[in-house]
Length: 255
Image (cartoon, rainbow, N blue to C red; front, side):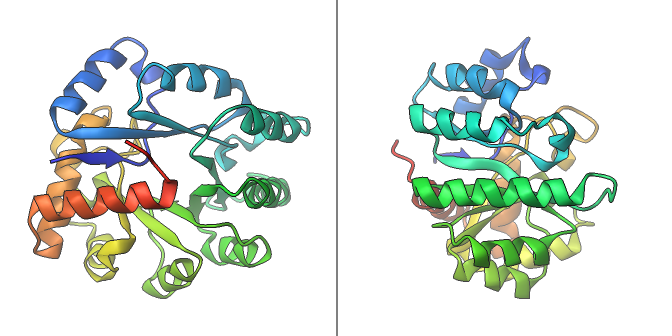
């Protein structure tokens, strides 16, 4: 059984003291791939160097909306150059976060559209962060029709999901699936086509119920796998195979 964590931040400082041990345990638990999205310009070079250490680690390059105050005008030029000189599997983590209304909505929108335009130009998928902004993101995708991507930690409606699907998007599900109280999310995971679901952890955040209060880790992805299998009334082997196939397809992963 092999599974892919399509969204983890192994380059974050939370893993700097035991990253190799985390990777070892994750691989022993069946993980065969790790997709690590960047969040800001300052981390791109170290992220690329980290992923160069092993063929099962893949990086995306982008600027996260939650770090909007750290993004400068020239960083878009830097991103364009970095993408041209390297081999990211996607543009990401990008998107809109309107949960906190003070987070510079206009600047977020401008930066998001510029990154979508770049994804269109270089023919790469995108990894989306969307919070309280699905309608705005869907509107931007109409203006900039990227080849597809992943809506990370999807929590929108089934109707919104159907609109994302017409743009060739898949949906990331992770640790919140393991909480029985996540009834809306578990219903979505049951109703969406299996061909549109990928697994993720968002480590070090959004940990599984079995490790509540602890740092999240890719090694816990099997808990998400088992929860999804239970919700779908499928075997863990079937879910592992389909979600891994979905991840390889949407991000053109070769492993």
